[in-house]
Length: 213
Image 1: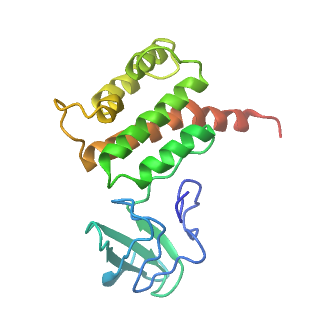
Image 2: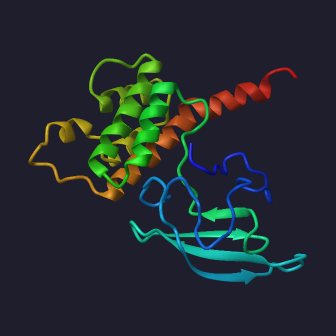
């Protein structure tokens, strides 16, 4: 998992006690390019005040020295615990099967290497489908079958076809296919995260909510 995870954070709750609003933002990965231990120096600090608030919020804008992407973070004051970070980093959803989660985590970390991220995203989808018994045929055929069986929605199946989950083309270096871009990799990862939420995270949360206390 990344350094901070906003999925279960309550409004106003700190992201992590050791993530401070300083001249360098100490994230495990850049939320734009996924580089490990990014160099994120501050490029400016300002404050805002909400109507009726008891005090201001201080914001700093940080630029990734690798990809140039901007990350914005806020705290009650400079040097204090970070309360908000934008954009949020992609995180591996809860309750996803171990193998699929490992592939997805690697895909997120390798977005800056798009061909690898696409293949890893496809491997994550493959692993998720296999846990539900979909083992025969191409990846797209199994996704379509899952939609027919109401394991996923038809819109999710259409989304799968819209993104570049054609990992077989990448492995065999098909000259007729253009190389995937970072945007292609990001779209694949977004799809896998959503698929994991629908197939595993949401059903697991529903079971926990309905379980007797």
